[in-house]
Image 1 (tube, one colour):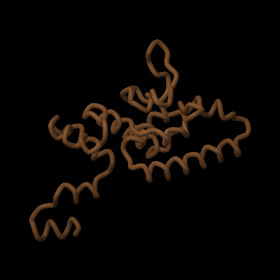
Image 2 (image 1 turned 90 degrees about the vertical axis):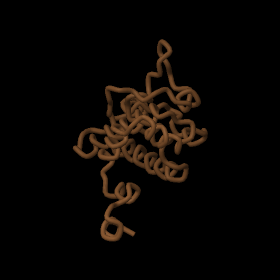
Image 3 (image 1 turned 180 degrees about the vertical axis):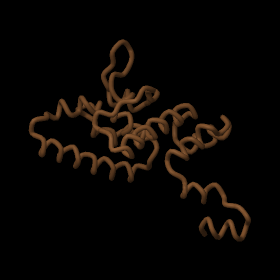
Image 4 (image 1 turned 90 degrees about the horizontal axis):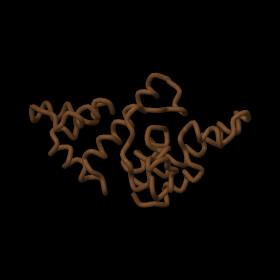
Length: 168
């Protein structure tokens, strides 16, 4: 049953049907402007995730989506607001300086961490496989850039592929 059917038969469209017609940005804003109790209920659908953490992960994904939509450079993507410290930061033993993680907070790897928490394991594994293929393609077709430099620009640790080994 689609939006038209619900509108015709019931005189309204349920939210779960309407979300299929919304953009990610619209969903992000809808979540942002929801009441705290609604955001808390939504966050309960994600294991070990607070309402504040979910909101910050959605915000970095929305920022990344905007960079992509405007054909801006993605590999050196940076945002102003960091994602919260998550269990994966410590499990991957990401580097720290003065008690703060230096990567995986405001960069492209933070987006990867957000996706690890927000999409199911199978989808994430497919994403990781495709991402690895793209990284290898860049390294093959751009011999002037080393893996270390590319990873540094993206905020990726050398062990980034281990992200699928850990439970969120």
